[in-house]
Amino acid sequence: MANLPGTFGRYPATRLRRNRRFEWSRRLVAENRLTPGDLIWTVFVRPGQGEAEPVPSMPGVERISVDVLAARAKQAHALGIPALAVFPQTPPERKTPDGEEALNPDNLVCQAVRAVKDAVPEMGVVCDVALDPYTSHGQDGLVRDNYVVNDETVEVLCRQALNQVAAGCDVIAPSDMMDGRIGALRVALDAAGHEETLLLSYAAKYASVFYGPFRDAVGSATSLGEGDKRTYQMDPANSDEALREVALDIEEGADMVMIKPGMPYLDIVRRVKESFAMPTYVYQVSGEYAMLMAAGEKGWLDGEGAIMEALLGFKRAGADGILTYAAVQAAKKLNG
Ligand code: PBG
Figure 1 (tube, rainbow, N blue to C red):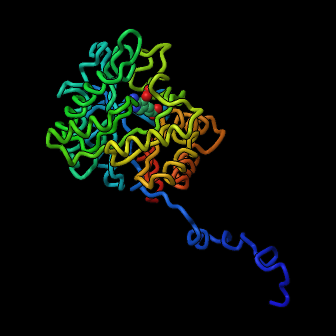
Figure 2: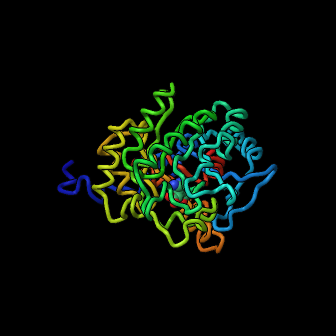
Figure 3: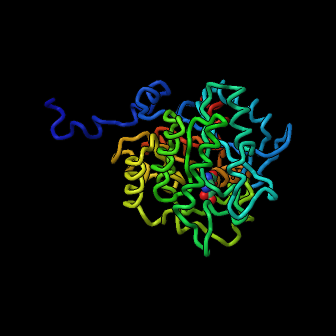
């Protein structure tokens, strides 16, 4: 010790690069790990049979028909992905101002849920609750006098959720951002004997331009036109408000909470995880996926490498799991 006066714990005695030198030592000191078990695969479904149609703004992503989904769900399960979340491209002729197609027991989402549960019963199926795939105006709720009304929308969302659960959905994930919907959904599910159905709340969902490619993929961009969702989705300026949203949803009965988008909101992921110690999820949304993959296509960076780094970043920020369009690619990579 005598030869280390005042320098112990500092360079040159301390060299952080020692741990980084070899693959084996880097693995030993790794603090966070991404596994296929952390991923929820988000997938677009479209009508038809044997269909797999590329989404132009999301390289590598396709809208697939229900039969193709069933086959790919088996593959995803074999790769170790625990659950998938389905989003429908509803034909325009089935869209109405009040989105009644959401309540059709044979709508695309219900068909998809049944097909996945038939093909791979062990796979968790998550359904989005919101009216935007079904409304002709593209808003998530009912519009009265140019305003998305809250309480009347919540009543319809409860019926939408019951419709999805009847088809076999395991996890109800409301993305609409109406006030009080988690509590209302819990009561409606319990009253119908579905006390075991999970609620994954899109608790802190921001009004984001990063949803652009998703709206192309499901066709709600055309419906929404110049409209936006700022009267219900959160202001990107706010962080304390996200904690209030999450606190309310937990009180109302959420089993899991989600932050969305992901990459520009890692601070929110960290605050939510540290404040509530809840199962916390983050959505790597369409625009995040698109920009990384597009830069990859241009040869400006390694697109898949960038996706993997972003996914690991979510874990480091405190997320327990990630909803991502890249789940299958990522799981393949992780499985070597
Ligand atoms: C619909 C919904 C949206 C997303 C998930 N559910 C779009 C929106 O709110 O306009 C976006 C997902 C993505 O961009 O990947 N309520």
